Length: 95
Image (cartoon, rainbow, N blue to C red; front, top):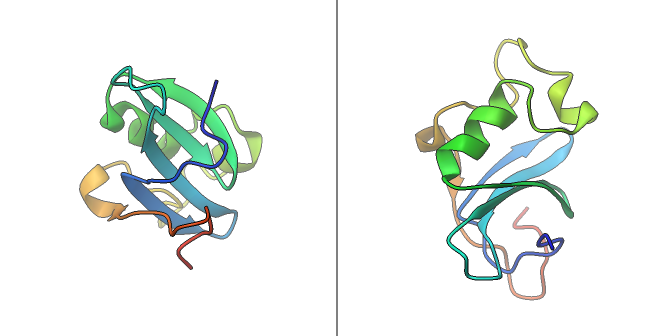
């Protein structure tokens, strides 16, 4: 089960495709989900693994992965360059 509408984002990046986000797994298993918009793309042991996959074209989403090699990067590889924050109440994007 993936968090299609996570209530909390650990990290997010606003892109022309929508918000790319990393959120704690709602099952409380210590994992993290990478997502785009309202879609979960994959589960990871560590948040940095998700940022790395998103930045290097291994997210599993063709729309996002097509931008690998773009300059400037669509999605930063370093989580320190992502925004930290929460999704707003009701599951709406913080844009």
